[in-house]
Length: 454
Image 1 (cartoon, rainbow, N blue to C red):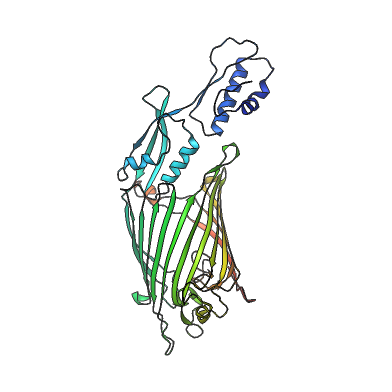
Image 2: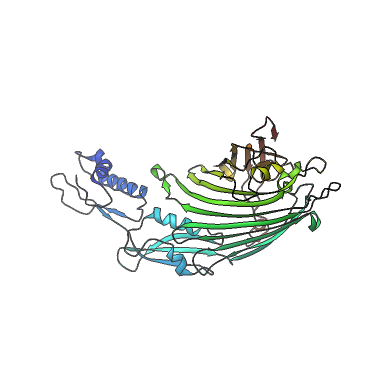
């Protein structure tokens, strides 16, 4: 037994053909061997390679099997209107005459598709040179500017239930760094009780890391309590640096794990708990005020796993505050708002999402969130339950706690389009009907107080 193929070791070759060694040869067994080698090539991402059994005179029981590797001719870009071809082509790491590995190509396409303004699919076409294969990037992109206006009633009684917002997303199509700028203005309470501005800048760096800076500034003017003016402000500046990790394929090519790690910081300043007390902020019982700063380091990991029946996403993130970063990042400042809080703390979050694909386009979705802290936390860091994104049917942040458990279960219908129903196929609408169950529980770290909402 001998292997002269660089990527196929002798031991692996013996494993593939071992059922046929020292047995009679027939056209049937030769076909089976060829199929087994093809299956192995596919499992290693070499689906462009071809297995041949040439005509030969068999002597001494030796059979010659040839593997012709697919090599890249060129990368072609088609269909793009706004994103430059050279920038898209530059994200494909394959070079002319290199062997085409579909696993690496899949990672490159996933990186391109992280941009919300384009979708890239690949196809293979015969190259201009004998034995070469071209990779064709089939691009669907849209104008890289998206303005919007919105309305919701996700507010709280003290600041107004009705919320109005406007904003935009602007995407860089020139540099190849996929820089993105987001801005949003939000108001409620008749445009007087809450005004909030937030923005984000993000860039996809050439070495496949992502840098993000985001911040916000908000002012609140809830109704005064007697002589107590509850006017408040909150602002934040944060940064994240995401490191894309190598994709891990599952055995037998039945899915993969795409994951990344990240680190960063948060700096926050506020002079009350108005923004985070939510439905708990009742003028007769609350409204404590005092300036405080938050400075914390952030470390996290996210992963998404696909399999034949669905997908799983998870995130682990830790927050650590040494305390003392500023004069208002102190125990004394914290305890003006929350009597048990200290400026030195750590806490962590675990998030898990599972999607099961069921027959007829129906899906079953489950979410789990857990937060655990070692100290009493400030309102900016506490976990709030209640509202559209936690326990539906309750006001936002009906209950807050240092430690929390939250679960959501949804059954979702297939997506359908009114545009298609009424013959307007170009109208890009989608509607999904769902049923849900939500349950959440929050606990105070240095107290026996527990609140459940479902």
